[in-house]
Image (tube, rainbow, N blue to C red; front, side, top):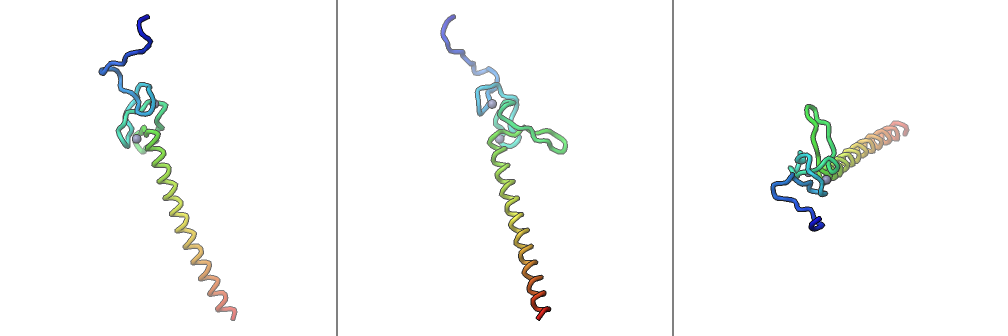
Length: 94
Ligand SMILES: [Zn+2]
Ligand SMILES: [Zn+2]
């Protein structure tokens, strides 16, 4: 036994950008090398994409805000319709 540290050569396998595991492949979004534990597989229409944790988090947040925006828009339309119906009902009942 000589030395406790394991030397990793420059020509060794590519390392994951998030942990020290061997990288399995690049993230489909930011092209960073990620291992199997640090990426999520996204089923595409033709291909399965590997998305790193950071891009997955970002995508999730943007999706959620898009849904929130859509929900708010939808609720605003519903409220406007309800107000219009209420106004018409109030006008016709007078
Ligand atoms: Zn990793
Ligand atoms: Zn990424």
